Amino acid sequence: MFRIVLMTLFALASISCTRDSAESGDPTQGPVGASAWKAVPRQVVDAHGRVVEIADVSRVVAAGGGVTEILFALGAADRVVGVDTSSVYPEAAMRLPKVGYQRRLSAEGVLALAPTLVVATTEAGPPPALRQIAGAGVPVLQVTAEHTIDGARQRIATLAHALGLEPAGEFMVERLDEELVSAIQALSTDAPKVMFIYARGQGTVNVAGRNTAADEMIRLAGASNAITAYEGYKPLTSEAAVAAAPDVILLPTRGIQSLGGTAAVLELPGLALTPAGRAHRVVQMDDLLLLGFGPRTGQAVAVLRALLLADRAEGAAAGGLVARGEGSRDPSPFRRGIGPTKGEQP
Image (tube, rainbow, N blue to C red; front, side, top):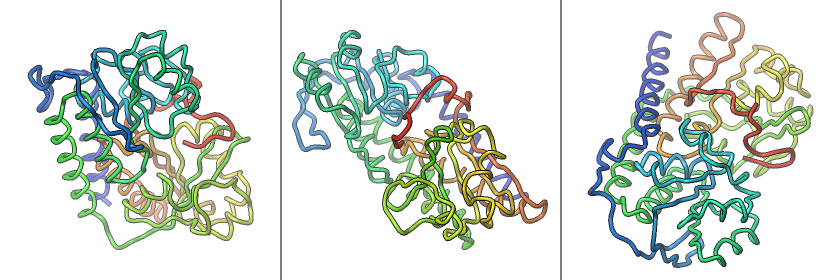
């Protein structure tokens, strides 16, 4: 048990160090310095295979929490003039002008910031808004939205190349891989069944199946997804919950807050009848840390694994535990109206 607590503290300490560097936006942090900024114009191939001509990176609008986190971690904070509402890390990003949620961008709001470049994932939209921005002469660079380690590497490499920060990107990928190796080496053979619930209030309660960001994180943490019958997300039902029989219930922090806390989670259809419900095994973790697949992915795997192990050990001894893992100073951004609304997925 003592080893598990040490694993959790080490992972959280690593996140704290990364946070300080990311929030500073200081290009002198790590390998990034003033000399790392390279001259543009340059050509970058986006996730759709299109060549995007980039002539100026002095004013960047970022859409997508993972994209914003990467830009800050690269040391490009002083170039970012606006973000979408899913950009909740680092805290400095939350103080920037907002251009709407990444799937519902406002072209007028983006163009009002006079950007020289817009970066987003392939999940960004709507398409007419992106075309309007590009039609106004602003390059729009879309990176992969793939929720895998390879996807994280590709996003980092593409954004680093777009901003002329290749050395910083290479360093970031190396660090991500090192942290991931450390996290995987710490895994045990114990594999609890985990049900991930994405919630935005009682009216939006969905469960993650295969090929989702949550599914991949659960796998990387050495656990198994309790839901394997479908891909994507489906609404929670009592029958499905009982049939899945999860050992642990996992939610993002904003999701559990939107429901009203742990007690409210266990009142959702069928959950009280599951092994996790009977043992009160509910784990929450910072939204972007858990699902962002950005520079902190290796740390996120270590934190999730430590939480799952701690939950099992202490739950068995004390009859249940509510554990939480946080990667930001403000664990409750949901109260600010950030993120998807009813019917949308992360």
